[in-house]
Image 1 (cartoon, rainbow, N blue to C red):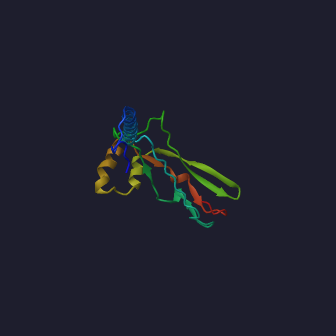
Image 2 (tube, one colour; image 1 turned 90 degrees about the vertical axis):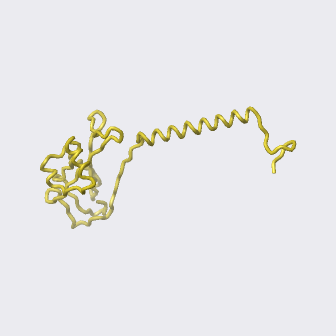
Image 3 (cartoon, rainbow, N blue to C red; image 1 turned 30 degrees about the vertical axis):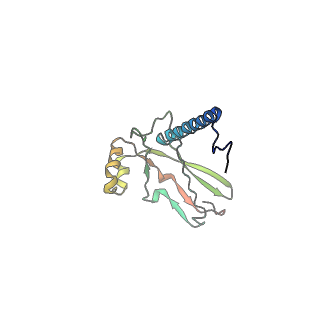
Length: 158
């Protein structure tokens, strides 16, 4: 056990000031991290690669498919769509790897129309209100699959 002149602890002004400074810095760091959490300061970018999902004989053509996909990004605080063209540009691309090397192609993205909405299944009861709310604001963006053709390659990277 630590003892100095019979005391378990030794109190000094400099030790007290140092403890206050450390507590202050810790509080500031915690407040900054809480603010980042509340304002969603760091957005997430998701990437998924499914290697060797298709072989050479597999071909998927978007024009022949009934596949449809729509997305929107909504501000957490205001609930309004994040679509200011000064700050946001929607882009989707897919990569092609073959014996000639690899390249990418952009997939067109545009606002969803009534014809696009007719292709989708009905939303669940729990999300129907939210889907309709963003549909009324024209916040949904649709991916143009008509120009997409996916196929397996000799390199096995699809």
